[in-house]
Figure (cartoon, rainbow, N blue to C red):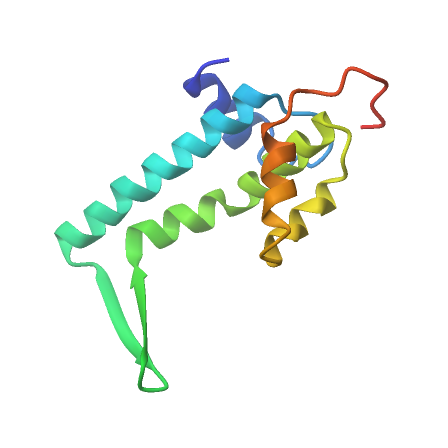
Length: 124
C-alpha cells in the first residue's frame, strides 16, 4: 500500500470505521500524511498571519491556527479509527489508545503500533 492508497482508505472508505484491521503500511502512511499536513498548514497559517495567540492566566500562551485547526478537526476521528484498527491487527482492543493519556503508557502503545500483525487467530 502506498501513501495515496492509505490516505484514501482512511479518509474516504473508512472515515469512522473502528472495526476491522489496518496494516502497518496503512497506519504509518497515514501518520506521515498527518505530519506533513500539519507542517504545511502550520506554515500556511504562519505565512498568512492566521495564527492567533492569547495568554491564559497571565503566564501560559495558547496559540490557535485557522487552517491547521480545521485540518486537525477533519482528521481527528479518522486518526483514532485507524489506530484502533491497527491495534486490532496485533490482537489488542482499540481502547488501549487511552494509554496515551499516561506518560508511561505511550511506550507499550508505540510498541504495539510498530509490531507485526498477529498470525494466530485474531478476535477482531
